[in-house]
Length: 353
Image 1 (cartoon, rainbow, N blue to C red):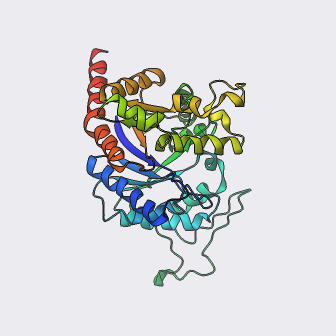
Image 2 (image 1 turned 120 degrees about the horizontal axis):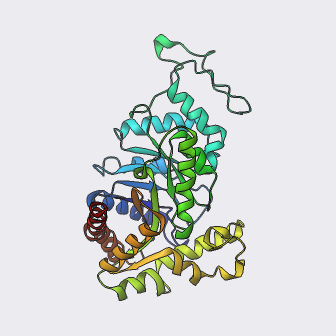
Image 3 (image 1 turned 90 degrees about the vertical axis):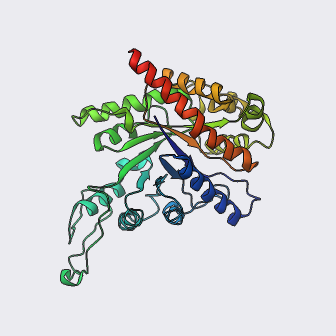
């Protein structure tokens, strides 16, 4: 099982933006040094807490500062940018990173017009002549191209035939995951969904794969969780769960309030008809945060795997650095202690089977 990193990020509004940008960069540089496989960065245009407005621009600053980690949009705002811009900027990023790039999108976008146009640009040559039925984006360079001068040609990605495309999945039983399976895009199950619903993502992904005449590979399924692992249970419980200044408490109060505002509290519900008033801050914290010492966290991750089945990557959710030493220690323990023990246990169980 690989170890990945995902952050929105979510910072308190009073914090200095330049400082939080430095912090977000430092977290991914640390993840690279610790051997995390990839790092997904969220993207929001109008949010004073979720402060990355362009994940590709942010990640571009990390290309020379990292050596092996894959840099992933998580997700690109397909609804806010013309697909030609995303297609050519992602292609250039892929070349700058020499293949250390993953294009992350939202599952709701997979049936949208933009992704079809992006893939067509990467698959076709000039003049492109992209005119899909009922698609508002029409693309052609026929009137302006002068091919011997290079005019009218759009860049292709460094990776062939294209970068990995990952969709972040939030809703239980998300139908978007079926479309992902059909198109060989890979699911990342979000860390604000109850674990009991995660299996629905894999089932829908397998359904899409089967409809496309292909077999799903568990290596392609990423599962994100909020995890606080420290040297003892008491410290982890304080920082990851109970302290009023806990960044995990701040994160999930933000998520709960925003989901409530958008009539999406269902992501936290145990069953569809559960009353909204039961979805309290403590209810969410109890179900969405894994915390403890190394052995306790290993046991919780193995229990999660037992509950939902095998998956290819555990994606560690990044938080605001209220106490930077504890955030860094948690990431270090995840990489150096937790994941080796998890994989050893998985290997033993596989051998026994």
